[in-house]
Image 1 (cartoon, rainbow, N blue to C red):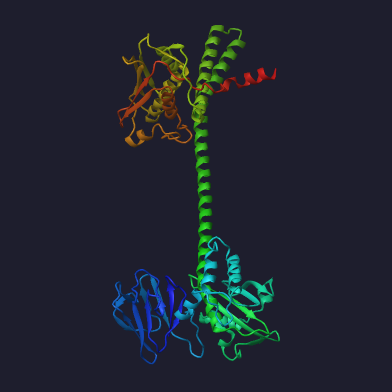
Image 2 (image 1 turned 90 degrees about the horizontal axis):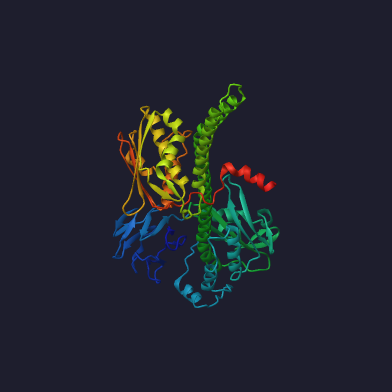
Length: 556
């Protein structure tokens, strides 16, 4: 039988069990070194109990020895058993009959010589320590596997002579693929022309083989191919998912055959190459998964943006449609009256004024969108005073049609001498957005209601406005989101979700504050505190209704 480390430090290491005692542990003097902090220095040993029977004994280790998941003090090993020491897993396999075996284990004395930099007398021209050090300098995880193998081949070539090489893999359908070199030139599998008898035997047996180790097909470690004597090494590279590829090295005629020492040296590097190839594959899989995740996130972000834009556009179109229809309707009535012989000029003036009021309403809605998109801060307000009562009452008059359709009454109690300085348009938009928001809520309830607006001056300066309605009110969860942009409880085609967001933004920009009190069935109450001088809303904006005028002036 033989042992194979299948998981943990030293993965891929093999050891053939014979008549001599095999010692396992963390100390370098052990026959099978377990480089794991949970392994004791002299952890366990395997002794020959009788021919073809081996006994595993725990050496009084600190963390114990497991066989097939069960702790043992001693047990007879059988083919298929799994030994666990710390994080290291060791599989027990039966040796196949009539086939010689190979172990990548290097005896301690030989390893010590090489670590001291001695050059072996068997033709190996580089110490194992130096070769492993060079492998450690490779940026292995980020290399393509084929490039990684090529770099390791160069390291192997500096220690062991060969003339041709190939890295042979198997596809899912059983077909083979390879890359390598023949006589220093890149070559395909057909051009490399490896000994597939040797390659397949190495893959099947999961052992490193020299050409003599596959039976009668080879003589004296030399095979005859292409009408010349050849010597070859085949080394299996066993991946995590039991995926096996084979590294193939070949010498031609006129050179000595490969030795077991050379095979051991190459196999020692092959163990590390196997790990590096697996890490490279995992890195590639991780990179691909990361790229797919980024693409999915970008796609989701694009979708979310399109949904938000669609909602914004539909809501804005809905809000703009009503006042725009009023503009058209009033102008049509005024035009019809002017064309009539019995037309009344005063009546036409009233219709035109109502059209202008409705147009102001449209402009205010456009300003909502501009205010939402503005990234520049509000500018300080002017010293120009305005009457708060007149601004509030005039704003409600503009909304008269919408309020009437919703069966909403209004009650304004603001002192006639209450004044602020600055941008009155900002206050108009606050009142309009609050009134229309309440109106829509009462429309949805179908019960109508009342809006009350009270105002007073504050002793500390500024004013306080109380805006309240007796509509359906809001739940706590809805109230917490009421001022968020694009949040709306209305149908997607009946609101933009910008009204209260813009209200809060205007008031914050003006240096004031707004608080909301509400509960289901008890309406909503907004408390607004504003300074004596308000900031200017849209001081850097172009009036959307004046764009054509500006264009005409510039073109003249």
